[in-house]
Length: 377
Image (cartoon, rainbow, N blue to C red; front, top):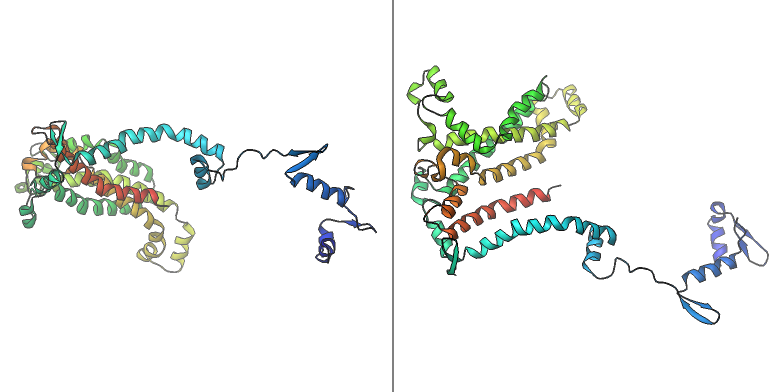
């Protein structure tokens, strides 16, 4: 069976009417013979054509994106053509250059410098892991004895982790609770703005506000204690060794709650109201509606809120510095890693290598969390 008979058998003529002449030549509706079509196809597809006895090679055109070269590999990987890949590279180059200079460069410099001795800011000889060992033996970083007794100061690293353990769950739960509370209230935009105000306020100002709130004479918190009859508990909360860190954590919770509330409010706004109404019709109570309808919708946001809270706490500096200076409070009772980096790098005796070690410890904790958020879909 030839090609023409096969096309007729499958009904091709109904899609593209063809007329067949007696000698087997087929013509399409435009009157062009099949032989002419074949000849045209041969002329188009044949890379070598003859012109007056000489061979003429057709122009192969520009090289395809499948060729070698970095830009072609990028274009294939991103699914865009070579020209777009080149334009994308041109636009990204300034930002990537600045990122390399101000981020990758300092990280690499600190990673290398942490293995050398330093005379102030002048690099010395190679000391291997001596700076690392000295840093983790420093009681200002980890006070092993006080840690066993859970007595302050426990060192910057344990105190930073205490911030994580207390601050992150509280700010997450309060943010979710306020988002649920304000979801159906009139004037919720004003209420959300008031709560979110703490997050928009510079953290150095938050630290100064904490000093005023906890002031033993004029502080609002101590005045409230006097009003409710707990005058014996009045004290300078930011200078009391065993409670000062909790007072500052409360201020941090106020800051981060606004952020988590905003994210949860956005997630709640995306929940289909018909699902909640259907659950009400089925007799589901508030707890069951939250568990079966709302929580599955806001659960992905919780991962972002928690990780962002951890990153924010581990980068803590301003609130602690405003409340307790570079010492991190009396006898370093609420010092954190950021404070110790500043103290080691800029206050005598300058220990630049130790400052690099502490900064790298922060990076090793924060970077995986940041990368996880960046890869979330």
